[in-house]
Length: 126
Image (cartoon, rainbow, N blue to C red; front, side):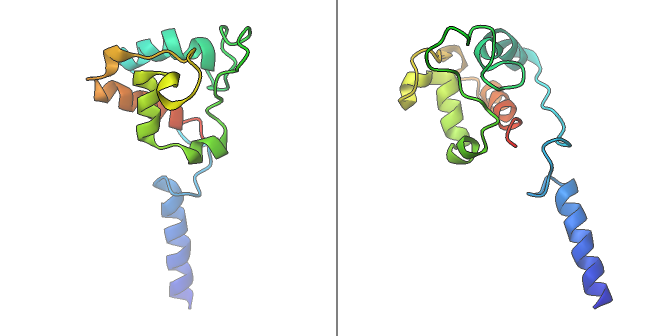
């Protein structure tokens, strides 16, 4: 019984340390972007979605339909990484959302940049 308890405790600790479901968002390391992904995030995404991904960027105030808050757990669970990549590359209209979410066709053949942006969006999930 003692051996089983230690095994259970050890696996729980490892699960959290290795990014398991018990991982606390407050302890999750922030995603730091580099290169072209950083430029896109800093010059385009942040203007509407804000630095914290809450949809409160400086360009969001006058919009009738507010930008997505990336911290919405229900929404995060409802979209795939492929869906996010499609929105990033093809814009909101491509998935039946706002035309104001611009397309980035220059990223169509830059899967690594898109993957970094998707990872950044995912980093805001609670």
